[in-house]
Image (cartoon, rainbow, N blue to C red; front, side):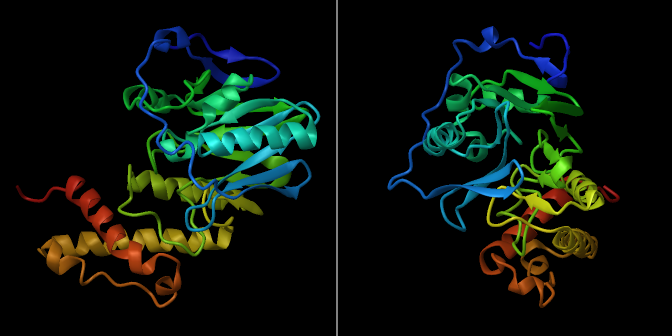
Amino acid sequence: MLGSQLANSQMVGAIPVDKSLYANREVLPDALGNPQPPTEKALIHIKGNLYRHTNDKIPSLHSGLVLINKEGALVIDPANTQSAEWLLNEIKTRFNVPVKYLIMTHAHYDHIGGSQVFQNAGAKVIIQEKGLEPIIGEKLPTAVPDYVYKDHMEITMGGEKILLDRVAPSHSNSMTVVRFPAYKAMQLTDVGQNETFPYNDFLDFYYDGWIETLDFAIAQNYDIIDIGHYTPTTTEFLKKEREYMVSLHDQVLDLLRKGYTWDELYRNVKFTDEQKKWFGYDSMSKLNILGMFRWMVNHRRGVW
């Protein structure tokens, strides 16, 4: 399935994928690829050679960091085919450089849709190795990655370093944290929040790894943290998010151990006044309780 490890001046830790194995794979329709009416899109300068691309409006906005220098561009998570086509043209028109790398943060269609547009234009597509199977198995209408990596990968482009880390399973078991150390910038898609509740009932969720990933991100103490949605966050808010996740976990566990049924349990989980002001409290708070409840039911055992 995978070739030998590749290590050169451009990529360290990359493992080539034998894409011939998937040449005739079945692919589902690109259901979200061409939203109508077309969504608003932007490529916004952040600092130096670093940019942020956005697609659609809050709360449906998707985003990712983009590095553009003399050698080319590196793009994170295009979101869908329409936005990928727009972004590829925007980079070509404004900067006249090729997109050399497309980083998939994890194997979820709402973030990696449109990756085939960049691959067809010559970009190398990269995902953590656990992400390859769901792309194939779920028949996602995306690029088949050119490379995967195991724990850590480094890319050097135009003299600038990009670091990819699989910290732990968190929001999927293929999540990549992408760092741009020269800019103290990080891509922390879906795991990071910014005065927002995590989405829904914690789709594709691993609690312990979520906390480990937050700890990793907090330890970097970076200035720029894009979270793939909404607006970029801060280290200070990541600390508050961690407190929320731990409190939710501990409350649900305590109530389960006291014998509360679901109907009793969700009514007795408490939120702070500050948390009640976060975006999504009305729509997401009970779903967050449900997601943690499901996690706890499947990850504990008493005397039985």
